Image 1: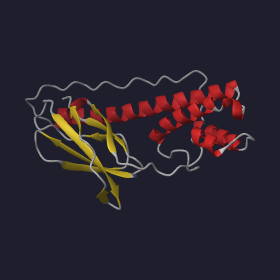
Image 2 (image 1 turned 180 degrees about the vertical axis):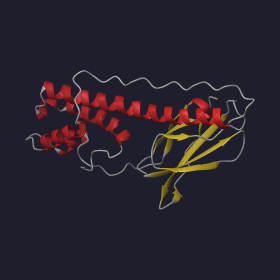
Image 3 (image 1 turned 135 degrees about the vertical axis):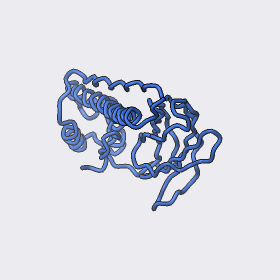
Image 4 (image 1 turned 90 degrees about the vertical axis):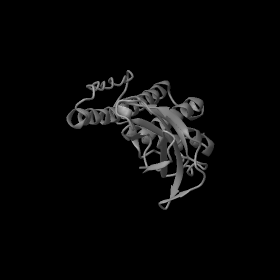
Amino acid sequence: MPSFYPNRFNDRAPWHVTHHAGCVTHQAALEISIGKLAEIAADKDSIVAMVNWNQDADAFSLAVTAYIAQVAEGDPLAPMPTIPPAPPAPTIPGGAKPGIRARTLENAARFKTHVNYTQPIGQDLGIIATPPATGDPSIASLQALPFSQVRVSLNKAGYDVVAIDMKRAGGDWTQLIFATNTPWIDMTPPLVAGQPEQREYRCQGVLNNQRVGPVSAPAVVVTTP
């Protein structure tokens, strides 16, 4: 696969958003037809919907596992937990078609042969491989999920691996994982079953299995039992 097109499925949503915006900007220069632009927009909307659905389905799967564990193996005196709600089906746009990756790569190859194509246009379209971003990783967002789980979204800043730490109740920082994917779901059980708790998360880049660079500013979330 060409190096400009993301291998990780979740990374394709922001790529398609950028690609579509570039196609809108350079529609006249590259002589992109109205129909082709609509097709690119439908591919973008489909990918974004499916990425969101995939992430919601992953979170639901973890919530189901936690629910089963609580019912089957939990405290007999605890209240019955609430069944986690299943995520809704994605809304796929009209005109959507399968084969998005193949179609996208075919479009990119065609754009690169156009007489008006330039490297800056290719960068706007996201069809030129760029070096990894430089900078320091950070916590992009935290989302409290059912059963005290937390979805941790990272700004990886070009790192393939990022260390995630967590602390709570005034305790010390504890390293949770060397994460390769974002978002990552923290399934750490609560200190007190059935009670919300405040957690702080931070992260740091990892190279050759060693933590490097500055530690990010902490981000705070209150869990949902």
